[in-house]
Length: 425
Length: 140
Image (cartoon, rainbow over all chains, first blue to last red; front, top):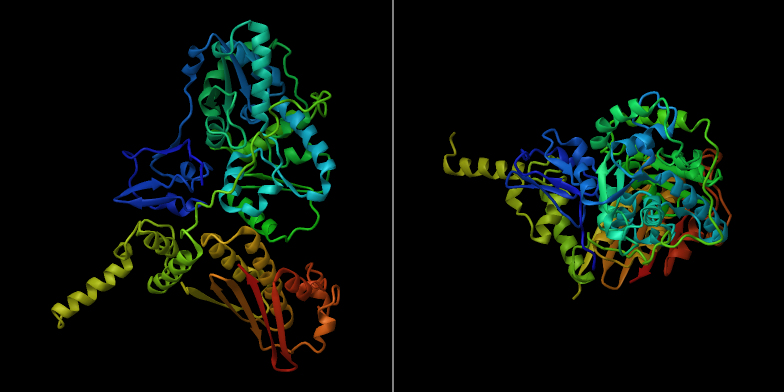
C-alpha cells in the first residue's frame, strides 16, 4: 500500500456534536465517533460527500479554493463543468454563462463539455478495439475510481484508461492560454468550477496521473450567486463562445456519458449505494455482455453533486432542455489521441480493509471478530461510535476500540453488578 | 500456524431475492482477510452458483465454509430430491429448471459445470429422495 489519501471532505470539530448520522450514512464505513467527536478514517474515505449531505450540524464540509484564487494569477481560465449550466432557471444559451464568467473576471473559458466530447470519441474507439475485454467502466467519477481501488480489485482491469474530461480540458486550456496571453505557465490559473468535493480531491491528488494541470477548484455553489448579476447584464448580447454539443453537455446527467458512446449496450447507475450494488454484481460476473458501465456516485449524476445548488432532478430536466437544439457533437479528435488524456500510471489495488498482516493472522482475527459479534446485541445502534456491531468487532480486533464501548453490553453488566452488590433491590 | 475458521449459512427455501447473500458475505470476509482477489473471484462464483442451485432444486439447505491458510472448502448440503444422473447434470447446457426459473434468467444449465470450473476440486454425493452434498475446494 503506497498511496497517500488526500481528502477534500473535512470535519469541523467545533461544530460536531458526536451524533451518529454520518457513521450510519457513510457507504464505506469510514467514520467513527470517538470521545464525542466524529473521526474520518482517511484510508476508507472516497470523498463521496454523503456525510456533508447528512450532517445536521454542518460539521462536515468540502475544502476547495475561494473565489479569491483568481487574484493569484495574471491570466485565468474558467473550466465550467456541464452541471453548472443546469443550475439556472430558463437558461437557453450556454454563451450567457460563459460570457458572464468573463464579465465576472475570468480572461477566458474552456468548457469541460468540449473535452468530454473528445473523451467520448476516444472511448468509442477504445471500446471498439478492445471489445473482448468488455465491459468497460467509466472513470469520470473520481469517487467511483477511488471506491474500486480499495474495494473491487477484480474490476481494476475494466476501468477505461482515460482521465476525467476536466484533465483534458485543463491541458487544452493551458495551451490556448499560453498562446493567447504569451505568459509563462506559472502566471496562468486554470480554475475548475466543480459540482463535488471528489473532483477537488482528483485535481489535488490525482489517481492514474502524476499531476493535474488544474490550478484551483471553486464550488458551483460559491460562484452561482456571483454569476447571476453578470448573466443578467450579458443576456441580451452574449459573446458567441460555446463550442459544446449535446454529447458533451449531456455528461452532467446520469446516462449522458453512455449516450455519447452511441450504443444501447450499456448500464448507467447513479447514487453511491446503487453504484456499490452494481459493482458487487459486476464482480461476481452476473451481467451478460455489456459494453459499458457508467457509474456516478451522486443521485442523478454530476448534477447531484453536493456543491451544486439546484435539486438534482430539476437540474437534470434543465440540462436536457438545454441540450435539445444543440448539434450532436462539435469536438472531434485529430489524427492522434491528445497527450495526457490517457492515464499515465496503472491504478493499483489498495487493500485498506485488510485486517491481518498475513492470512494466518487474518484468520485468527476473523475468528475473534465472529466471536465478538455473537456477544454483541446486533442492534447496530451506533452508540459505540461504529456504524454496526460488526464494525465495532473489527475495530476491537484491530485494536482501535474496546468491548466496553458497546453501550447495551455495558448497561447489562452494570445491571448485573448492581444485583450482585444489593440483590434485593 | 494451524488457524481455521468455519462459517455457516442457512439457505432459505425459495426466496430468490435472498440468493447470493451467503456468497456476498463470504466475499466481504475474504477481502478483509486479504485473500488474493483472483481466488476470491473463483470462490464467490462457485458458491453463488451453488446457492442458486440449492434454491432452485433443493428447497434450500446449509453451506459450511472452512477457511484455512491452505484452502477454502465449501460444503453445500441439501435435503432435496437428489440428482438422478450426475454425469448428465455436469454437462454444460443440461437443465431441469422449470420455466418460471428460466424466465428469471437462471437455469441455463451452467450451474454445476461452473462450480467445477471455478473450484480446484469438487465432489458430488447424492442420493435420490435424500439429498445432495457438493463439496468444493479452492487452493490458496
